[in-house]
Image 1 (cartoon, rainbow, N blue to C red):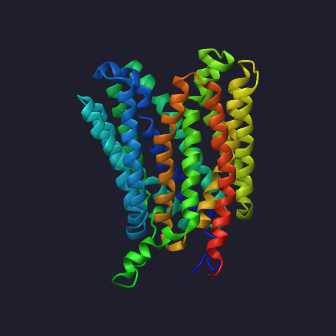
Image 2: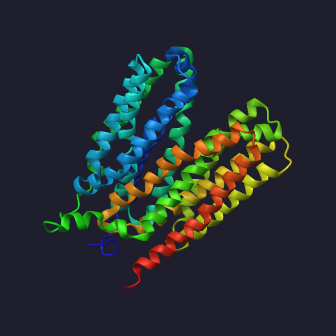
Image 3: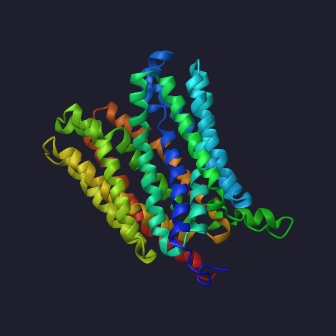
Length: 407
């Protein structure tokens, strides 16, 4: 049966699915930032450089990228629920491994485990949402999913740094592991709400391989992949170098620099709420994405090339975060519209691996600009990445329409 002939599920059923998936997604983003807030303490504990510590994140995201692509096939074959349990369990185990590490090599090994755990979430989450939530509520589901991810990023430093100051970084990571295992227990107890039947097996023989990889011939899949690569690049600039570049350009006091990213993430969560209502009509999804990132690019150019008082900088970070957050639910609708019903997990696995690749590569390029003092170029690069997202959003729709035309 299709969604047009089935009755709309009661909103409480949808709310349960959305809440449980969002909670798991929060832990995924939380786990991405387990180590960075602790870098000053880890540097002293293991006598390593910041470059070596940064390489731990490269390991994490490269592994996550590979696993994200492969896990989509597992999700389509076995269903998303067991893959979700495995991912949460691995994140908890990795946090315990970090806490017990006695050498840099052990940290690197546990970064592999954490990357494996993190790599399953987007194929799992979006398969559950798309197949368990009523079509009329998908925009709100994507909105909650984006908000919980932002809150996970915000929670990591807010929790880990105070615990480290009060006790130690090892205690902080044990608490992080306990949080991951607690969420695993919650989704296990409510596992019936997350039951999604696995897809039927294809006919036989060589058709299996053809069936499982046929989606790779869809141009929209690769346009979506490129979109998420540039999206991750823009986000990584904001999370790493943009606050410091703004400080150098506008003499922003350190206290204000420290809150720029927090303001961005909180406003992004607010924008995602608004974006959930705007995404009620899938036909305008690419226009919403285009307008949102066009506005974000304008803000980036204002910060990079305008003459601003220091107090205006965090305000503009908030404005940029809000409009970027508004694009999130419509962005996810674009991907859903490009995914065949029988390959949802695989499509999301491939498409969202662009996030990990972007987060691994773009900071290396923009970091070189910072090393050369090209602070305006950092903001120009951010604006260019956001501008590419405007074009990419319309390319997704164009590629999808091309795929639907008869040969």
